[in-house]
Image 1 (cartoon, one colour):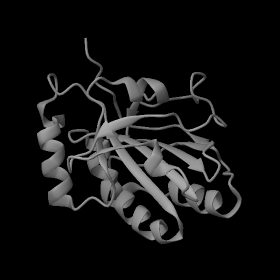
Image 2 (image 1 turned 90 degrees about the horizontal axis):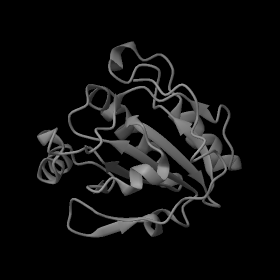
Image 3 (image 1 turned 30 degrees about the vertical axis):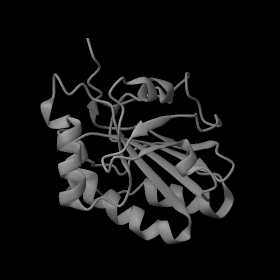
Image 4 (image 1 turned 45 degrees about the vertical axis):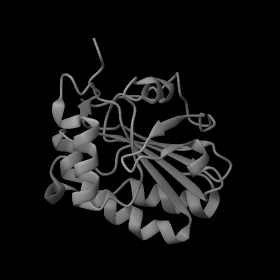
Length: 184
């Protein structure tokens, strides 16, 4: 799926919402983990999506590059694990350990946080500036499913600009990925 326009329910300029979710390491983590960062990134993701699998190493590299400059990141999986068992909390724990993910990997089992953000697909990125305001909503690159075909990195320049000025241009680049698997 490709999200063609930015969210009217969660538009650019909106403040980071309050949330708390279980992390794969047993802690509860939420917005307080992100507050005070020079830039804060929330990525809606999952385990099974080929777009996530194709862009995950790129995301890990980007995060590792910008963490020393003040970036903090959380990833959130909100997919219905009944429909997609690979997205279960246990499988999330396994993935986090095996990949040594450099961010908290949170489980939104009730899908309330995904609805707060008006998230639609995986991977979908929300970047907040030091004031906690949404300054970028979009994709990681122009080919999240096939890393060899990626020619444009959208997320790195957005993070760099956010760290420097608190703003991004472009501020919206349509996310491309699998739809979030909502509970029925």
